Length: 507
Ligand code: AHR
Image: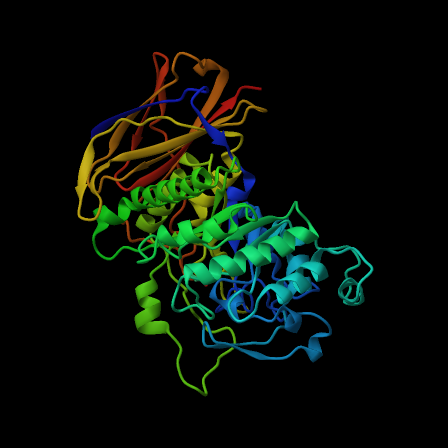
């Protein structure tokens, strides 16, 4: 057992937690939309063909804003294909995922689904094969109340009220050579700036996200951010970050993925602030971490990738990763990292939501279930409210191949100033030792005023997962080791574990 210590101090505020931190992402990719959220023949489908069991799971997960419709998909997308009478909508090739897109689900249907799950729409425009005019048309179609052909067309298509989309992504991963319409930082920066300025001429209160690097390992990383922000600083509000992690066999480094994410966030903040200083601006650019997750991308690249000029399947099984206990622990630690930077990461999207690298899985005609990663997300999304608190954990370290010496324990807390509820989230990265964690309340909180509960995700088999056959194999279990002792709390955190501790004020 190794010893660790942290302090919950209500004055150690990092920043307000923007509810958009618990966003997600639905891309027209694989079985995310078709045979995922939408399966008209399913016994549990509602009148719109949406699976009600999936709607319930999305609500339980607690996602706030959902990025749509891509991802790589958006860079070849014609939004006009997805509106109007369904029987007249064209079937198109989706070059990004080598699939066919039927356009059965489009903007109107997706918005209806969002209303069912109670989430906000975060819409991406195509700056790959298209440009400013098409983005403006989509904006006018979506957000103008009345008086033009596009607004009238929306009404004729069944929606008198505008969609009123507040947050928009200016393309997707435009630094990636795999992206349709991939551009240099200079070319994309100019296009994004021009599009953003035009969109803000329509409505200055829109929140716009410019594409940052598709990962911090891109050769153009940081310089890309500097150049695109130099072009567009005044016109945009966010710069995006994307990061995916996978266990390549080096478990120690995998468990330390949060360290890499933290370094990524700090670098982007530093670059954005550098541009601010150079421009003499008093405006701050925040981060939209609008793709993050565990993703076994090597499986996609080497096994699942679809090819063939005559092979364009509809809703193929793609990116259907099955998540283990270790994956969920790393996933939970990534949430901790996002919260530790709540002052600058004010929007984030778990990529993705259903079937595609997802916390929710479905079987056509059959059941749906929660992956291991569902649990840390739902717990954090429901309980991390108010402000994030720095708890400065002190623990031993361990040596990793990728990141050198890494703390065994990472943690963050939140304080809901309205209710007084405190939530603490902690990860034990040790692969072989439990931790005895002492939680000091900095002499500012009276333990007797709270009901204290704790739940932990861990397992003797860190490779265990939830499957169609065994959907409830892994979950959160009450951690009964938590105890108050002379004004401090003590809890045992098993090796490779993620834990949530709640201090709920007594009624
Ligand atoms: O989420 C899967 C893919 O990952 C997205 O389409 C793309 O933006 C990223 O490379």
